[in-house]
Amino acid sequence: MKMNFVKGVLATAVLTALVGCNSDDDVNKFDLTIAHVNDTHSSFDAGSLDFTAQVDANDFAVRASVGGYPRMATALKAAREAANDANKPFLALHGGDAFQGSLYFNVLKGEGNAELLSEMNIDAMAIGNHEFDLGNDPLINFAENVNFPLLAANMDTSNDADMDAVDNILPYTIKEFDGNQVGIFGLVLEDLESISSPGADLSFSGEVATAQDTVDTLHAMGIDKIIMVSHIGLDRDIRIAEQVNGVDVIVGGHSHTLLGDFQNIGRGESSTSYAEIFTNPNGSTRTCIVQAGDLAQAVGQVDVSFEDGNIVSCMGNNTLLIDNDFKHKYDGENREALNDADQQATEAFVAEQNNIAITAEDAALRSTIDTDYKPLIEEFEGKVIGEVLDANDPVDTTMLDHVRIPGLSRGGASLPGTGSEAGAQVAASMVWKLNQHGYGVDMAITNTGGVRDHIKEVETGGLTAGYVIGSLLYFNNELAIVSLKGADIVDLLEDTINYAMTDSSGAFPTFANLSFTFNGKAVAGEQIEQLQVCPNGVDAGNCADIELEKVYKIATNAYIAGGKDGYDIFESRKQSETVKSGFIDNESMIEYVESLTAEGKKLEEIATGLNFIVPDSYADKLDVPVLKAEDNQ
Image (cartoon, rainbow, N blue to C red; front, side):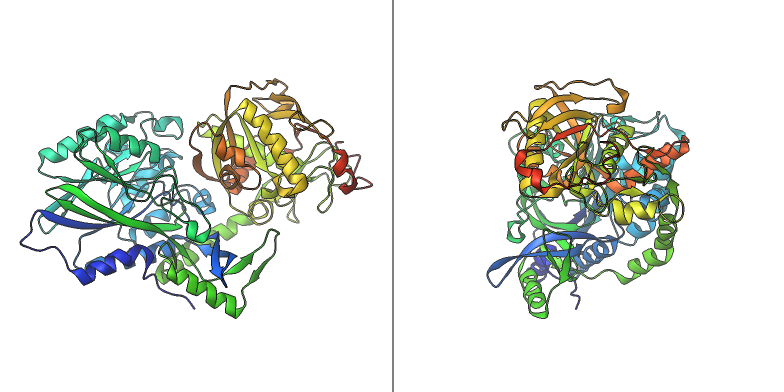
């Protein structure tokens, strides 16, 4: 049974219906409901969510489908209907980055987003950095085909004739509700050129100065209720709140921050509360900040009250949008559907929570996706993207072998000295993708458990996109960037290797642009030897000893960037906030292979950078005899 979205982010709207709308005699008071999303990243289809439910007084690990554009549409439409029924002013806002993040974008180059988002009655959207990943033209096409304005007050288009001719890209827009005007302006990254590809004739001004100038402009027009829809990240949103007077609400994006307390479902709590209020530098006005995670998984809703143009109340929450296709989540690969009793108990638990809701997909949007767009994706999945060559392997020359732990086979390889051949190329694709977009990462460190198979050609005579998506990297992990000091990288490598051999085999690291020996016979704390950073890959040879106090940018996946699976140093010792790129690992791998093919190259075995000396305590667990010992040992 599917339930409609009737709680969570809608709770406050339903309560408003009971209380009534603004009194005509109290003209200095104004209440507004805002539903919001951000960083939806072409997530036309649902992803998966792991959470815990209280079933029989025990934590009960569950996996369910989450989000997707059709569920997001259901939630936004329901929120608007509830507000309309309560005769309450309502806005639906998008914090930017509709582009990138799924195979739909890889294939369609932005097509589809305009049609689907236009069906959701969005009132305004900030322009995100990923809207420029393919240059200006896809953004222009998007702007010309959506039925809502795209906002960027600090983007100057005056020297770019094509962009300047687009009448739907604005610094701000104004909404009126029974004589009450609300100004909504957009803010994009002031350093957007460093991580995306806007046209050379576009320019971007400072975030703080532009925000204050725009507020002053709106105030001069007599508008004293002001919302900023931004794509600059939570830290910079807070900076705006603390350095700019007069922004009442910031609806944010870019940092992919799911604000709020989700400890009730075992998913922790953000350091900043949802709808947290910050005092402006003048000491009197205040700013409320909200953001709703990413990948169309949640919709936020905040109820804001104004008196004499000043915000006096800001309350609400984010709600994760799930299906009721519950399965048990185990540490292994197997998932089982719940029995009837557990299904009912889990549904009952979810129904009691205000931040997770079983939400039906919008049938019309689902039909549009399945009819107009999914067939194109399925066609692409059968496409041969490149060829594989392992010249060192006398048995499988069209396969790069994968192992989780060196010397421990999982279906055909041991690689006891070097580790995963497939993992080395996956890590290399992360560095390539991020640096194509200006992130300047120094290396990649990811977990072998995130790489699910060998890299191999299939019956069609090559490596296909479908194999990368369905077999090699089927978790659809987002690429993230973590900054660590060199000394912390040393500790991270030693910790995760030992953790893999004692707790979780998939935690073993695979990496790019690093070379070292793990000496399992050495004492703890001294097992990483001769660690070097190789800016152009190990095979290029220009490696240098790691600098212990230097801060390095590390490409990884968002799962372990959060400290999961033995990678707690990523979270506990990071030198700055983790950056979520919006790029997906399998999409990036496909583009990486395609780029090699375009250069006339095959996906070949590369040096993994690892020399693995097994600890005595682990030796009896390794393969005896070693499988394919003649291959790259």
